[in-house]
Picture 1 (cartoon, rainbow, N blue to C red):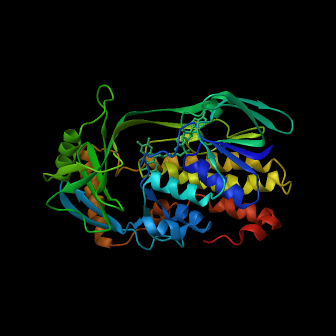
Picture 2 (cartoon, rainbow, N blue to C red):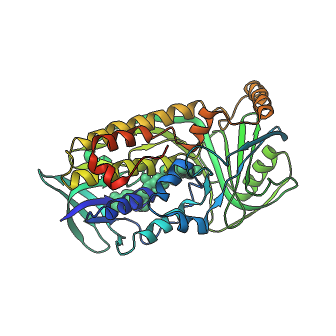
Amino acid sequence: MFDVLIVGAGPIGLFLALLLKRQGLDVAIIEKREGAVFDPRAAVIWPRTAEVLAAQGLTPAFARERRLLEGVELNVRGVSRGVLRLRGLAGPQSVPWIIEQHRTEALLREALGDLPVRSNHTLVGLTQHADRVTARVLTRDSEASLEARYVVGCDGAHSAVRKLLGVEFEGRAHDGLECLQVNAECEWERPPTPGFCRFDLIPNATLLAVPLPERGFRFVSFQHARGALQQPTLEEAQAQVSRISGQPVKLTLTSPQWLTRARFQDRLAKRLRQGRVLLCGDAAAVWAPIGGRGMNVGLLAAHNLGRKLALVASGEADASLLDQFNDEVRSMVRGVMRTLRFNRLEYPSSALALWFIDRALRTASAQRVVPRPIERLLSLTNLDRGPERRLLQSSADARRRFGPVTS
Ligand SMILES: Cc1cc2nc3c(=O)[nH]c(=O)nc-3n(C[C@H](O)[C@H](O)[C@H](O)COP(=O)(O)OP(=O)(O)OC[C@H]3O[C@@H](n4cnc5c(N)ncnc54)[C@H](O)[C@@H]3O)c2cc1C
């Protein structure tokens, strides 16, 4: 019998497996797909998440592949409105890292060392007993049972674990918003300064161009959704980037190919713990990728759970600590969703709203400093230090294992 069975080898399941393994737990991780997944989805790791990865000694591996995000060049209707500098944000990892999700996953898999990801293992059933959970799993050609003292569903937005528990995924569709993303090399007249993102706003559309570590850019464009959701074409992406950035561009797709259009939901699971089964990552909550928060917040939730589950599984803390995980992470997610609703920069704005935003940007760029609350929002250092402090205050053992909290 395993201490913990993790369902899903996306970034959140992999990181949680690493945290638990490093604390001496016997962990199994299963994944329904064959081999590694190559969706580049999340492209930025924000400072607080980077701090949590660094605490696991992952900085050298990430440093080989990441690129530092120095700042954002802001343009309204093609006219420069200054630069938001990101070097020197709050926390010890004071510059965001640019690295695509499939590379983050590859580095986490590497860090797992001799702990294998069991591919072609699809969870189809769960039975809870007083002291353990039995998981029914389909493999390529048979069916197997795995037993563990705890099970964590890190199996994404359509989580089988959440559905098997019958936990409601409360929330709503993001009416009328869609996002086109493409990874491409770009020929343009006014490229961003190396190391900087370019951010363009026009009425009813926004565009972010993030320089990728190897080559090319990730273009992320939000606009109002119309009609049925259709797969975009390269020509359409090129026309959209040209229109919003106010210059003719030529795009050439890069590999692994990423040309998608998506619509989103804001949803949070009603409970993240039911007995010996827990939910983490997209299985627990999803929202639009405004601000690039999904994977980052999921990694912080895994960090929260990893510490608590290790204390509970080793008998050093009562199982009620897992309810604290539920409360803290649900509250963190609700906070993130609230602040995203007020992110008027990335949401497409009407011509009138854009006029006000433009005035605010001109005033801010004249002051040339990022206000402290905005800095804390950008770096995510506002999110999880409170729970971390409480955990360390409540347990001398946690202090011994994890050391002081940085501020
Ligand atoms: C278009 C798009 C753009 C995004 N952009 C950003 C961004 O810019 N920044 C950001 O931070 N986030 C972004 N996100 C969100 C980010 O990708 C997710 O938050 C992240 O992937 C969550 O990781 P996860 O491990 O929880 O789930 P996933 O990455 O979905 O992984 C879940 C894993 O579980 C496996 N699985 C599912 N069911 C089972 C089963 N029954 N048995 C076994 N295995 C199973 C799946 O195969 C999968 O490998 C974006 C998402 C989308 C869709």
